[in-house]
Image 1 (cartoon, one colour):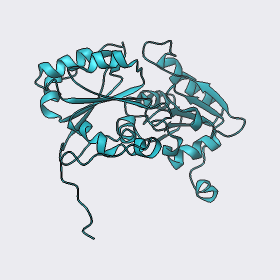
Image 2 (image 1 turned 135 degrees about the horizontal axis):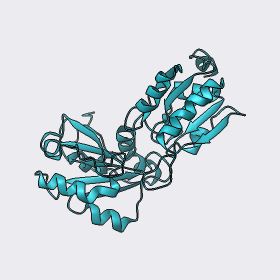
Image 3 (image 1 turned 30 degrees about the horizontal axis):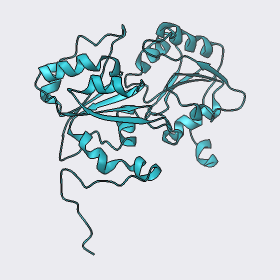
Image 4 (image 1 turned 120 degrees about the vertical axis):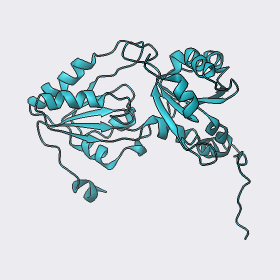
Length: 279
């Protein structure tokens, strides 16, 4: 492993790497991400980065918290972006570590543009986004050929914290069999109402995956009509990924994590007869 990591790119002084840490489990870090953690002088990380990932940092590196969480005191995006510029200009090797993927509702594009405008060299290291990896840890596939040939990813709130007013709910309700939503728990009542008004059935399955791919992961299965009430009754809180669609019905058959850690018995495939080896 050391030989492999040593063959990967070196972080140069005065540069910034924008790196996705994945949804939580440090095993989902890419080799480029681990390589960056082993070299960085300063690590500026989000609230959603698992502490086990930060534990891989080079001894002596400076770790700065720059978390942004909806409804809680947060650093301003402009200040975070300019801090990256400041650190790079001071000659540091800077790792901007972000939960999931930097370019999927992660504001990585905004930070990279600030670096470009200020002449700071940077590298983008993709990560596994929670809308795919987090669902996989809950036993829910984003696509399944018996269910959907399209999936829509959207954010449940804009920069002001409100439901984005530019989302075409009618178009999404009609055209996307599966909808995966980030930062949507707070506004799930309105979102569910929008989707049902556009024709989605109230009994359509919905799942909330909180703290995905961590030891604190919790999953709630419900329906569009009951989503708001069931979330409130559950006491579950963000961060969460929400998925709407028939793929949720596959969870009893694909909850591999529950089978491994809790001894759950997996159910038969709900969409197709089980294929067994004739031998």
